[in-house]
Amino acid sequence: MQEEVENRTLTLIVSGTKFTGRLLKAAITKYMAHRKEKKLNKQRSRDAPVKPQGRQTVKQLIGQNQGVSNIEITDPSIKEFEKIARKYGVDYAVKKDRSTSPPKYLIFFKGRDADALTAAFTEYTGQKVKKAEKSERPSVLAKLSQFKELVKNAVVDRTKRKELER
Image (cartoon, rainbow, N blue to C red; front, side):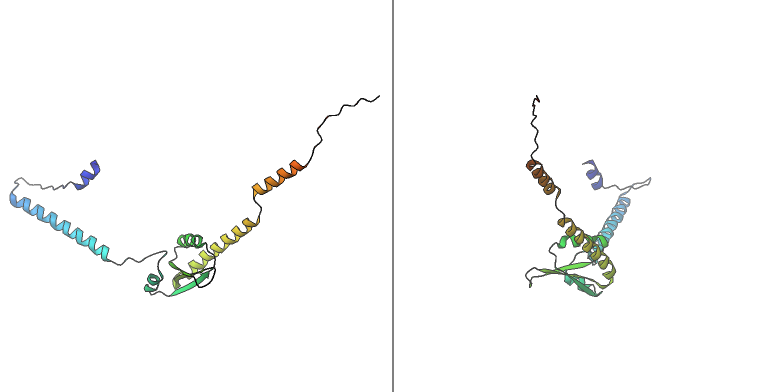
C-alpha cells in the first residue's frame, strides 16, 4: 500500500530563494510537457508492429515474406512437437487436415528456420521411438503379479513328519 502511494505521489523540487507564482507556473509547465512526451513515446511504441514468434497462424507466417515450407505429421500428439519447437525457437504454424480418417497435421515454418526445424524434428522422432520401445516392455506391476501367481501355484510341503524307526 505504501509503495503504491509513493508511486502516485508527485514530487516537484524547485530551488530558489524567491518562490514566486511565475516560478511555480514554469515548473508545472515543464512537468506537463515531460508527461506529454512520455505518453507520446509510449503510444509510438505500442503502434509499432510486433513480430510474432513461436506458434502463429499461417496468415501471420506468410505475411512475414520469408518463404514458407511445410512438414506433414500424422501423429495426434502434436503438443510434444510444439514443446520441442519452442525450445529451438522455430516460428511455425500448425494446420489440421481433416480430410483423412486419422487427421494429419501440416506444420508450416519459415524457410530460414529449416535447420532449426530439422533439429527439432529429429529430437521429436527420437522421443517417439523411445516411447515406442518403452511401451513394448512389460510393466513392472505386470511382472510382479506374474511372479505372485507363480509363488501361489508352487506348493511347498512344509509339514513336519515325525516317524519313529523301529
